[in-house]
Image (tube, rainbow, N blue to C red; front, side):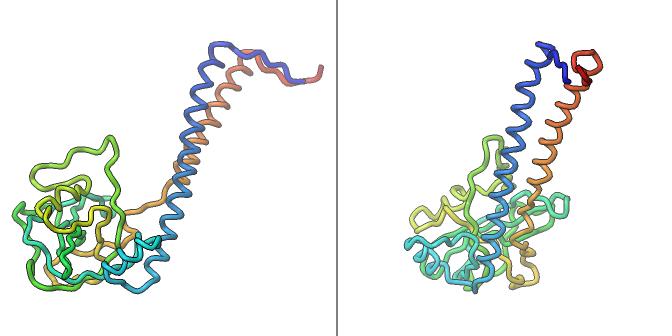
Length: 239
């Protein structure tokens, strides 16, 4: 027979603790499913040969999903200052170079050219700017920064890709603000940044996070029950 006399104050305090811990664990489970689907979508997109940007945009109008598809760009890099996007590479601070690219048909889209040295001259320009080039990459959907994202720095170092600011000088041209392109093919020129794999910036640790929150909930229950046992409020035995 179990005899249980819950302590009112401790029991009331446990309710919000468990609600919060279980809610956080459930949220991470949802994030895990979202991230798993995203990575699967990337795998599918990378299994298709590169497609010209304008063809992909036409496909999107017919209802096709074009996010994370391989894309081919033909045109030239705009003669604008490069923006440096702060990121991590193998657990260490790194920068990725962003620059606007003007296609042969006049569309302007932001391109992530890859990793550069952690310290860069604000006046840094990509070589072969203004010359006709053809590059390949991944068409990545643009995600707006979260509420707590830090402000970008005025020296051109960004913590999130401010596509609107990047494309502001091209207000008279058709700009693409819902996507950007991550180059993934070998660099065209030795002095260009090193392209990053599409998966490099997309870790999937949500299962670990979910187990952590659920584990904390179980630990809280264990402490709660242990306290009641130790104080004689929870007893197990025969009648």
